[in-house]
Length: 514
Ligand code: ME8
Image 1 (cartoon, rainbow, N blue to C red):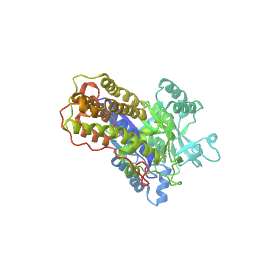
Image 2: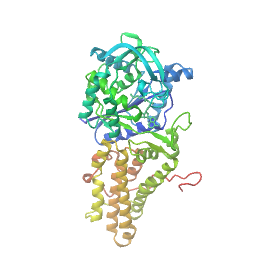
Image 3: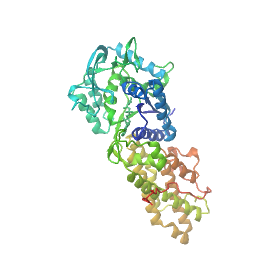
């Protein structure tokens, strides 16, 4: 049986349309999910929408629609991203689904039975925008540390005994040094926990848009306790006949999140699970924040980037490449038109695009439109290039396992650069006049390099990679990672069609980039 790999995106609030930030997180997970499938794993890739709480309720009220109808509409916008951005999630969870109520209520009852939930009353600050409680000491100039406005809340509330988990959390972090990445973010988590933890209010009594607390209908569960549980709902927790799936999938291999919600995933979630005596997720990666031409992305500034418009303008695979290549994963990033065009015309059109077009055109013209055979003897320059290519999978695995997407792409493009230099040095156009056999050998080495590069970049650029592999006439069932390396070389004697360029140059209305 294939090994399981379970990864999740955050579930997004349905208070608004999806923007580039949401697409970014899901894209990173999509690339990783595709990578793991190609590498022989049985992948479960989950995304979805977070539909309860005051923030969503207020957005529905502003629109004058009942929350259920509102969430149906907005959730669909997120679901549509799967097809428009070519995501391959295996499930899409909504927290308003019945299956999720079962899971939340089961977890609640377990926490109660363990003695970690008690009834009291809450008096303190709450930020609806973050759906988070803040201590007095965290409030500066009347705002939460995130800049969100806060309001004073006083109401009866159930509490989770978070304070009892400080030492156990710190010990867990100590024993699991890869639990949170990047390292700098992990240090923030540790120092937050070392500073002491207060018990956490886990129910609200002043509104009703949430999962009812079992046996106390006056309360709904705090939206974060509800939301985090989604990761278990989707793999069978609390479901009739869900045990086998749960046993196979849980704990998750990776929760991918933005840095804004790390505390919920790296502190509260593990504490809930410890209290319920359930296994903890293996890793949480907190990526950085995108700005638009140097400015914070916000509705009030009117600079929200619609990922679908971006894909229409530049091309879907181009956008996917840009987002994962431009910014070291984990860092903040800035979207700018000029950076996008630079990557498209440089890395894609010039480097990989030209390599493919040059090599395939030469084979088409000079080898009778037929792929040359694997050469009987290789020269040092050939072996040196092929050795780099054959070592790619091992390096890619290390990068993907550490969520270093930019490094994985850089490694593939280093090979593209080396292949372009090899073409210039070997000058197959000259060999055509002097040594046809050597020309064919050089072109085969290049085609084999392109084959392996195209296989490796499938997770990020599925359509473009498929177009390259189609032109090389690689059958669809020979595109998995088992076909990488020296063991399964490109076969010769295959007839080829006249090649067509895979990566167009981007030319502005003003002619920039031409
Ligand atoms: O927090 N740059 O949902 P949310 C990068 N429902 N990523 C961004 C971004 C930006 N400018 N803006 C948003 C919630 N994101 C909760 C999650 S999980 C159990 C519950 C991404 O709709 C990033 O992944 O506010 C961030 O963590 C997430 O969207 C927040 O989405």
